[in-house]
Amino acid sequence: MLKPKSSNIPKPTRYQNAAIDYYMGLTNSSYLHYGYWKPISTHGEELTLTRLRVAQSAYAAKLLSFIPEGTKTVLDVGCGIGGNAVYLCVRGLGVEGLAPDALQQERFIKNTNSQVPFYLTRFEDFPTSRSYHLVLFRDFQEINY
Ligand SMILES: C[S@@+](CC[C@H](N)C(=O)[O-])C[C@H]1O[C@@H](n2cnc3c(N)ncnc32)[C@H](O)[C@@H]1O
Image (cartoon, rainbow, N blue to C red; front, side, top):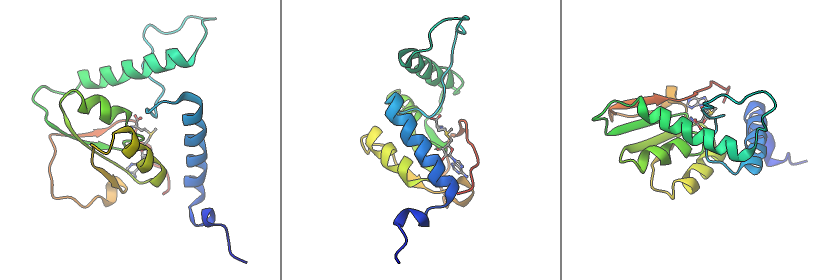
């Protein structure tokens, strides 16, 4: 009997994809992080998706504030589904992203309107002779791909 196609995908990736799918359906966000909450929510305050989105943009702004002036090119390692790449790109940085996951690749291309190069690879295996002003490791989590 033929095995379903999904069984070719490693288990951790399948779990991760299911979580990403669920998360994206829930938040409709292009970020894969929890945001920068400042001021921190006080006890009893409702944590809404709207506030999550505000916190996620605030995080991207915070991230940008750490990037030294004069930086022109950025390699976004573990770029997720493109939120940070878009944020940096529209502010004039030349961004390229990489992640070892085809589901993220699909979303990244969609969220960046195919304007940002994406490499489907782990950082350890990234074959490049290019150099970048900044190599960004933003919440880069090692998962057994
Ligand atoms: C929590 S997500 C963060 C995504 C994005 N940086 C953001 O802030 O929205 C972690 C990212 O690291 C990627 N990742 C995990 N292991 C990796 C590896 N070995 N090389 C490159 N990316 C990796 C995941 O696929 C995912 O895109």
